[in-house]
Image 1 (cartoon, rainbow, N blue to C red):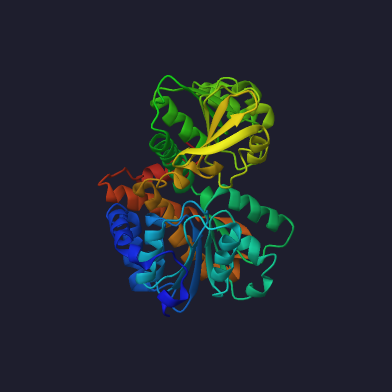
Image 2: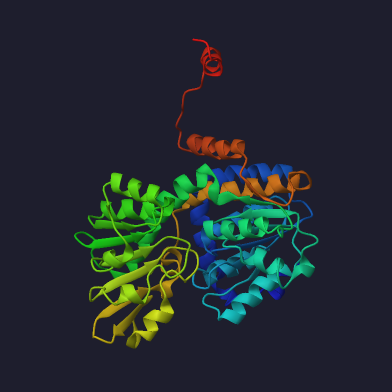
Length: 419
């Protein structure tokens, strides 16, 4: 495979800087390094093709190299137009991985890259947001027959998969990596919590302390964003549709109110719901002058850009990744990173140590699907608990942390109904 001639990337001259970035994260991903050692010996993907669609930055690149080390022919594309890093793409091509991705392609190019990735006829898939799976199950069903299964990274993609499964249309098994303990407890909470504010802070260069932050959605990602906002000294308001999560936010010390009321108070807004039109015209109408809007959900539909444009007399880019909208009454609101994932479109994504666990789960889940695809059926399934625990144990060992183990007497006590 001549990956240079077969790939679509911006500039191969950028490869050196990409290699430096990948080498840096490799040094901080001990769990994935351990999985790589195992894969090199066992070759679980020998002779197979793997297609990957993820946010194409250094940590993702290292996951692709780990899968490649397991014997796979790997093709990778981006899962978001603004999170692809061109130097990473060039470095991967030099490492023998086929790449179809550029930073900020137009919608037609983005779609073309997804389709070209699928036209390699993969046996296994890693997806983020469900774009590859959606194309396979709609316009390119001719590419379905060889696929054994795969793994999905995020909430949005799992929602799409479960909709397919509910309609009886899912054609192969997919592991819901997002629902694993070592994913949502750490990646969604601590990873999103830190990386969202990394993106906002480096993009705006404004203080958070003393400001009011509105967090839409109090799932694990929302919890992390709210927790970090509080740590930065902000007053935090949470908006929710789930009464249980709303009570949880209240008990965690945050104000809870509907978005229409919260819109009057917010200096910063972060949407983390996975749904559309979370902030729209009725909310723009009551916002403070200078409000800053951002999204940390997978697709750029949470902040309604159609409404925002319709209500504005003008717009302009005032700083990298900041667009200013002047409303008809003269108020200004600012949208970060085109309403796309602020932590990736305006930042480098989650810390390497966090993605170490998530991508370890992706790698071992893919190997599990490859071993068991004939037995597990065409459904969305959870990461096997023993794999979840294995990744956590590897992490503890990398941190040189030991924990207790049950004695035989303690095990018997827990399994008995007699004292």
